[in-house]
Length: 311
Ligand code: SF4
Image (cartoon, rainbow, N blue to C red; front, side, top):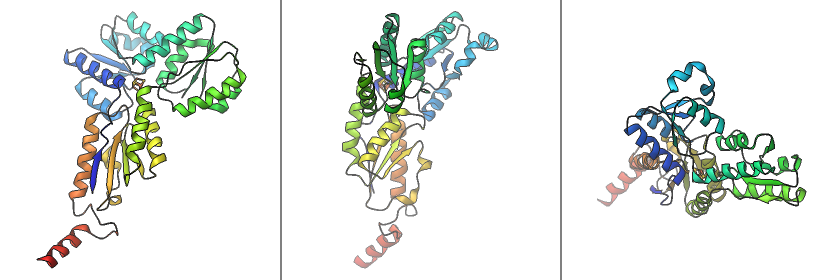
């Protein structure tokens, strides 16, 4: 079995920066909180928690009992942003803000604030439950609405002064469909394509990577929107694509001698998780129990038989 790690797979700049800021603050000995999962990768978050990162729920900021715990400590703003209300409450507790908001998300937040001030209606294409969309909606207030798809966009209450933008990790094709549906109803629609360029490039890369392989293993956190997007992109090229969070979810029996297996990752997947998956697959490849030939027979037995004959 041949195992290849996608040479273009790496965490996006926003996630890399959030992890680096967390590690730096923890190295300095700060007591560092994050309001929810720092990034959408449970196992990387667990690693950071092992270094001292302390997740709290956004609602804990309104809990009187938590006030004493949070006062004077540090709060890391996640790559996909926080609401202004939460940040101002944290400042009110005397918390030090470590801002890991990705510049692309910050740009969307600024666009929303500027247009709301000028009386525009705001429509965001994305998942209403996603932290980034919640942060944008909190800034838009009564002027904001979420369109999860083109059908929802066709039913929205809109005005001529409407700004359409996207959750950064949304599929560009979905954004195009919403844009099309809304443009038919709003002649003066203003469009800001805030889908992330890094992800668009990764989609192109993963299409080229996935095509020629027997199997693709996409390693990403279950809750990762970008991981799901890259999985679906790879799967459109190669039906034998698996979305995996940790190696123990893979069925060893799937892999036969002669298979070429590729490993790739989402924008929140650190390098150590790709290496861990590579070692796991290589170990299956080297194990006589784990590896069978393409017809399902025991690989080692056939190999030994062949060796005996040639001696
Ligand atoms: S996926 Fe794109 S927008 Fe989201 S954190 Fe990464 S670089 Fe920023």
